[in-house]
Length: 216
Image 1 (cartoon, rainbow, N blue to C red):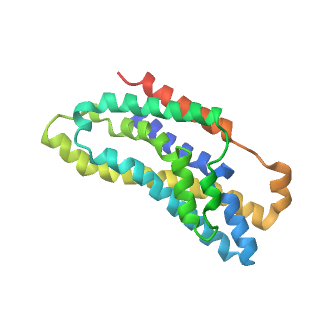
Image 2 (cartoon, rainbow, N blue to C red; image 1 turned 90 degrees about the horizontal axis):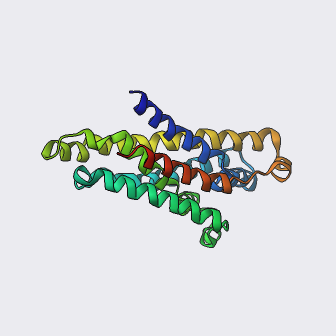
């Protein structure tokens, strides 16, 4: 129970981290509200960003919940996912430029931008080792019962992981966007801008290393 709780807290914590990271889009919500000159634009933008992020998380997690081969190859896949997460983190540390194609997405398509940003930055990939730990597939019996659990309960669990992560992301990012829009103003962004690229890349490496350390 303690391990399961820790994994769920990791899902929420990574969502909060994604939310406060400006690279995941909350400043775009502030921009949308200012351009529309209406506070409703802020919340519509936050919902669009959250929807795109949720789809990106689901696109990564659901294939893992549906693959019956995970029953037999759970350890190998978990190791591979951890190594891939570490590799993405190292790449982002070396190449710190934001993907140029994100700048070509029109600001009216925030859901699409959020989906592409989450995929490009490895946000969904970061959840894979955590998700596999939550599922604890190695403890299940092989055969039809384990396959049924993968196709049923763990598919639901994948959705819960994606939703919990996205809600945490929406609340933390939304709180910053609301604070800037209503009270702090644009001067806060120019004076207090913070860039979490190095921290984000490092966190990918840490998650991958932690996953490798607990994989037996």
